Amino acid sequence: MPHGKVPPHLRRNARRMRSAMTEAELKLWNEVRAHRLMGLSFRRQVPIGRYIVDFACPEHRLVVEIDGSQHAADQAHDLARTAYLEAQGWQVVRFWNEDVLKDLDNVCTHILRVIGRA
Image 1 (tube, rainbow, N blue to C red):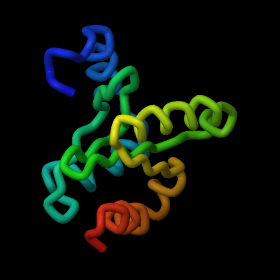
Image 2: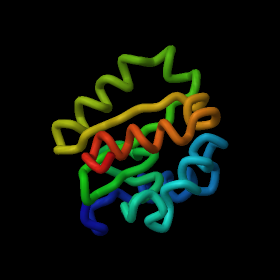
Image 3: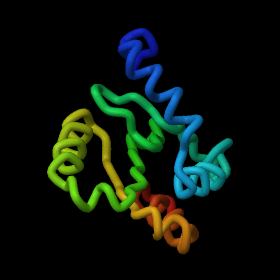
Image 4: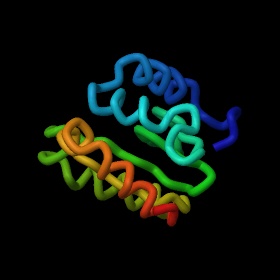
């Protein structure tokens, strides 16, 4: 989304979310930031339309979401969010916090597989 089109409240929320990342988000961010994952460029807490996604790889139109236990109770919201993002041309992959914290290598391998690099 072009810089000027992001509503100010979304920009503020994204900035706030960047400074309050979960342990799982921080762990994945440390793995993918600064082109560390096979040279791919990821951004964190990115506004896309009316949502703020955990991670985005714009070059491959890939969104990576890290879900905590609260997502198990609100699957309808996640489905609507995923449908919206896919309608905007993004592919969405989701991982549970536990998967990131305990099996980061396989999470990264799956991300690479989705974009055709593994």
